[in-house]
Length: 76
Image 1 (cartoon, one colour):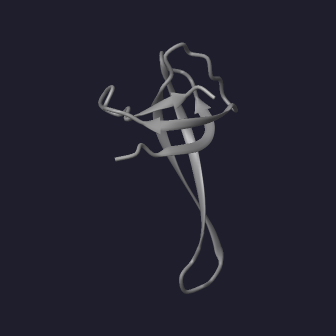
Image 2 (tube, helix red, strand yellow):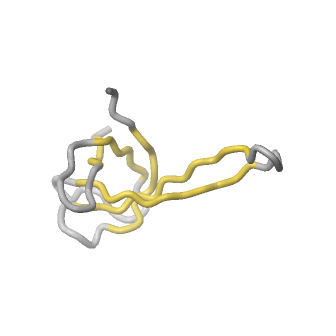
């Protein structure tokens, strides 16, 4: 099964080797036909602590690294 890749912005880098990434998706509401923005935060593994708040990043699914981390930052 292919691994999903999402694009978002780093919102936190307080923890060691972990960044919090805000991923926003847009879709059309099925009844109202209005464009809706929904966002979700993912915790991703950042091996070398290279990304800071505000950086655009791509994250990829991976095997669980901890209780909350199931994503890793893709080096672009």
